Image 1 (cartoon, one colour):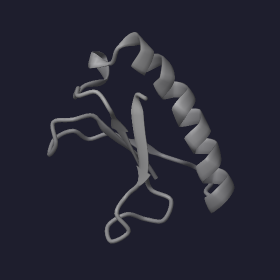
Image 2 (cartoon, one colour):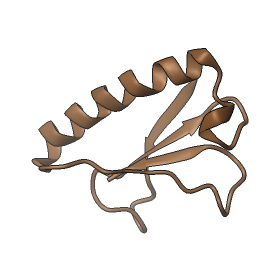
Image 3 (cartoon, helix red, strand yellow):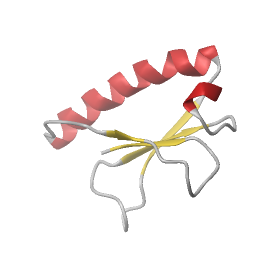
Image 4 (cartoon, one colour):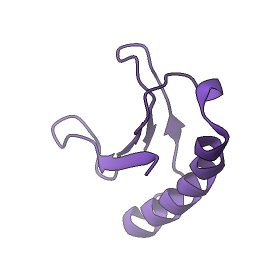
Length: 77
């Protein structure tokens, strides 16, 4: 398992907001292994389709900020 995917906290996340967290500790995209990089794109494709199908969203946006926590996190909104 390379990625943990979970809905963000209900108190601070819009409905459907998903957090993608790396299982292995790293911070930057450039630090991904080939396996992590190769699995990240297909994961985004699957999650994008699932979010649009269940929320009727026209677009799903990817955001990745690693300023507060020194660990790779990405969000889909």
